[in-house]
Length: 142
Image 1 (cartoon, rainbow, N blue to C red):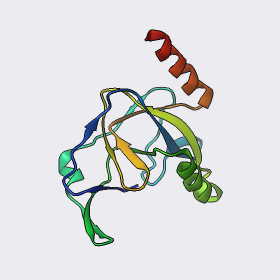
Image 2: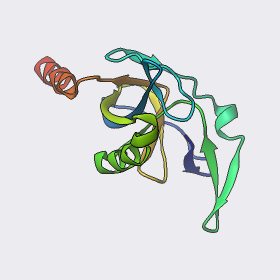
Image 3: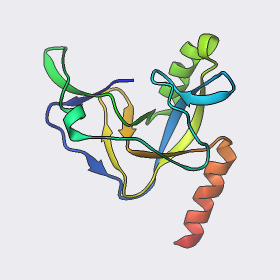
Image 4: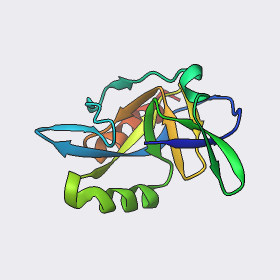
C-alpha cells in the first residue's frame, strides 16, 4: 500500500491512542496485510520499520503537485466507511475484512492524503468488542 504525503512532511507522534481501521486478508490459514502480506498478530503490538530514508525516496506527481510516498510501516484508514469500501472491493478475491485497531500513544505516524494513515506500531483487534473493552479499561485508568 502506498501512502501519499505532501513533500517534506514530518512524522507525528501519537499523543493518545488513535482509532484506525485495518483491512486484512485471510489466505492460506493466516491473516496478513494487503499488498505486502505481512503476517499480523491480533491483540498484540505489531511493529514495522518506518525509516526516513525510505519515506523520502520515492516521489509522485499527482494533480499538479509532488508527493512523497511511504511504502513501509503498517497502513490503515481513518474512516470506517472508506475502509469498508476498500475491503469490499477486495473481498471476493482475498477475503478482506475490516478490523478495529489502535496506533498506541507515543507511536510515530503519518497521515496521508486519502483518508489513510501509516504507523510504526499498531494493535489490531480480532473481535471489535475487544477494542471497546480496551477503551473502557483506559477510561477507568483516567
